[in-house]
Length: 254
Length: 254
Image (cartoon, rainbow over the protein chains, first blue to last red):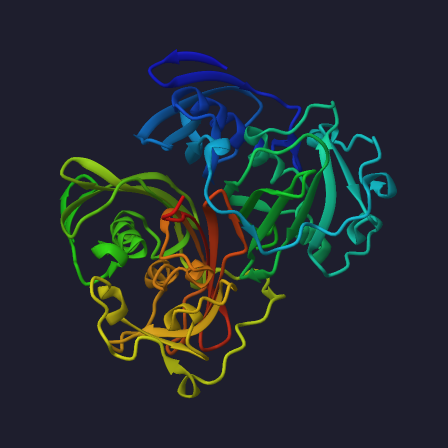
């Protein structure tokens, strides 16, 4: 990423993070927007982020236009727009902070995902490449059992628990969590749907992740008129919730 | 609300929707922003909304500056900024649609709140006015049992289920739901906290509500370093989920 002028940056959207349909994954595009915001805001960690996917983005050159909305004592908010060929494709607003400086009360009233140890689980992708879905080469996904839709038999239950880590050995950090919450197949594939398009993605980054496997829980509970939410939780190897997201997406059949 | 120029409006922030601390409620401020966006976007209903609370807003005159990001065939996205005395206090991005036109699949995998009939429940406020909290005069809140914190004995369980409706007999509509999801006391008051400040509020409006009582479910599951999420669901009298929200808030002690 190269600074061009006054809060504007140039970058290249890689084709190494493509999701279904040969399109760059939405979480990856958000990560690019957040990398630009991290350059213009005085705090290192995203805390709460909302991204609106306006139009398709293609691999290739992109401009990221940032604007600082407010800088406070412990949080700062900015906006980033991805612009390709003069057209805005993604708009993101984010509040950053220094997560390690959060010294208030901690109380976890929910359980981390209940998963067998990673070595007792199945590699979802198994090192195979999936045509047009290059993002699966970036991660290792380990599941207790293969999803029904993989076997051509969707279970009707759009809930998934899995272990996840970067395949190249890179450890997760706070800036990678908004990418990770969008890195799995849509849970609605267990409802027999071939995929889903994200309209909006909100992420709360709750703590810097410890090194190691991330335990994830994904679920959809309400499909209404073709729109559905997908909730995603990421827990780190210490057993701390490190990110929580919700997206609104539209089924291809709608 | 009065149009001033090119997507800009003037309005007055009323003191009739104040929350704790004599400050206008965040959901009310979001509703003002959405009313302006409804004037510049070609669809009537908010679908997905994210609001960032940058600075305190005071009752009195306000300017709302809107900008259209994209108008599509069935959704349109815009941004609204509340500006008071030249200073931006709230930034909201929202995608609008025509909810009644959503014709895709519907599948509800979760249950509506399990509440006794409204007439068998307790009026939380009981028609009393609470000093500085004028918003409670706008709604009727009916709970199966009084919250522990009201009796000075917080239960330690930050989950609330309740019936809610406008006190003046007005029926809920899609534009009022982003206000309603922020209209209750913070669930963390059951953890002994005196309140909480919203940093960001995301709302998905899932359907136009039918007339009548709204059944609501509110909960906080993770308090980390003083930050916590609050999830809010609103179900209408037909038993349909009509709105789902999540906010990130900060405890006053943090």
